[in-house]
Every structure is written in structure tokens, then in C-alpha cells.
Picture 1 (cartoon, rainbow, N blue to C red):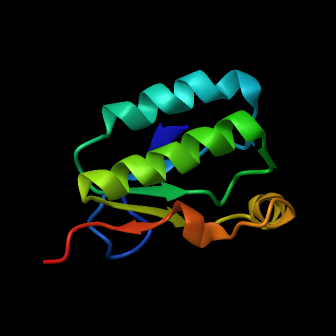
Picture 2 (cartoon, rainbow, N blue to C red):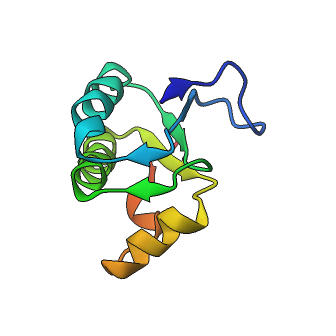
Length: 104
């Protein structure tokens, strides 16, 4: 996972590019990365995700709730087909990982 230097669209939010494999061993690092971004709007680029394990999904869901509670925007951009399939298997869609933040 790494922070993108340039956003993929006109969206001014910082973008974090998620890694290809989000498995058990990546969950602590993902959690720390996201905690370091808390307090500001954030976009996650999920275009390269080929594996999404339950622990990383839990981290992402908790982050979405945290950002929503904080009133900050949190979004998942470009989810890969593999990520969408994993979410669908457990009855979720990419919208579960989005928060609009505070109204202007």
C-alpha cells in the first residue's frame, strides 16, 4: 500500500493505493496506515486488489465507520473485479466502504 503522488481524478482527497494482496498479515499495517490518515477525507484506490481477506476487510469496514463518525469523507475508488466478488460473497458492495462526510 502506498500513497499516490497524484490523484486519479479531479477529486482533491489524498489517495492511498491498496496492495494486491490484502491478507491476514497485511491487516496491522493497513490499520496503522489508515489511522495515520484519520481526521481528513481519504480515498482508497482498490484497482490492484486481487485478494481480500477477512481481517483486512474488517479494517476497511472499521475505517469507513470511523470516518463516518468523524464526519469525514471516505471512499473506495476503482474496486477490482476480485474485490467486488469478495464483497458480494458476504453480501456487501463497494458502497459499504463509502462515507460522504459532513455536509458543506
